[in-house]
Amino acid sequence: MFRRTGKRKGFTLIELLVVIAIIALLMALLLPAVQKVREAANKMLCASNLRQIGIAAHNYHNDYNKLPPGQWITRDINGNVPPIFTANNNHAGMLYVLMPYLEQDNLYKAMPPINGAPQGPMQPIGTQWWNVSVNLQIWQRTRLKMLICPSDTTYENITVGAFIAMHHTPCTITGGYYPIPTGQPLGRTNYLGSYGCIGDTPCGQPYDQYKGVFTSRTDGEVTLGQLSVQDGTSNTVMLGEGLGSPGIGPRQWAWTWMCGGMVTAWGLGAPVKELTPGGQNWPPTSSFWYNFSSRHPAVVQFAFGDCSTRGLRRGNTTTFFTPDWYVYMELSGRNDAGVRNTATILD
Image (cartoon, rainbow, N blue to C red; front, side, top):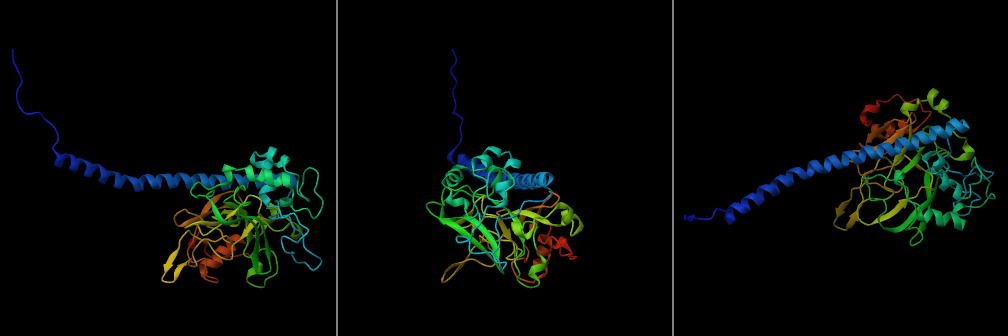
């Protein structure tokens, strides 16, 4: 009978630590690549969401021979838009009437139609949709994945409120929001239609020449034929994405899928924040509730009038009257006949 002798083979502590260090190093090298792949997938899904909304707008056009308005509002006898919460307006945004074209027909039928909308019985003029309890209840429990950019944390808690209505007034954008806690559970979105530079209210030049695709109802809905003969559908922004808030630190606000369109005058924002000795300040390149923005590296994505989706590089679009700002305005304007080189910011 033979018995084996000798030392038992195994790893020493030093060898084990070396192996662990190598594995940790490989993981550190691999993690950025994984994150890049994840972001690339999120960016593609975000672009797909924008394209589907664009196609829905085209299908609406096929039925009614015009694109939907950005906001269901009317002006007073002087041509002005009254304050949101005192106006005899419904203030529903364009995504509302596109619901049947986004496979959300049941949702559209469940909410009493907005005055002036193309289908169903109408609410009395002056009935703002948020004052109808059934609307608010449906809106609070409805979350639509197709309206959310997967790169954003859209449904995190907000500290101020959720925007329920937006419209453009002379030289500015006005937003009304439900404060928390009522605003906390409302259905949100990262996607809104483009009002153009400052909308369709008179503000003077150069702002007035950059009117967007989606205007208020009484300013006349736009047709695809008009886009084709004016600046061209492939050269005109139709809708874009945004964070609806600065995007770093506690989220202050959020856009909801009933709140209308967005202006482009304040450029393209990013979720960045700078620290100063006196506290925390957002630099001009930050995202805000009043501009299109994204968490995608370098670009903000848009659907154009031909339903193509492309990213716009932020460049120096947040500084008024710079070359990048003018290119962005020409892309967001539908009838400006701009001839600037769009390659400076078009991805």
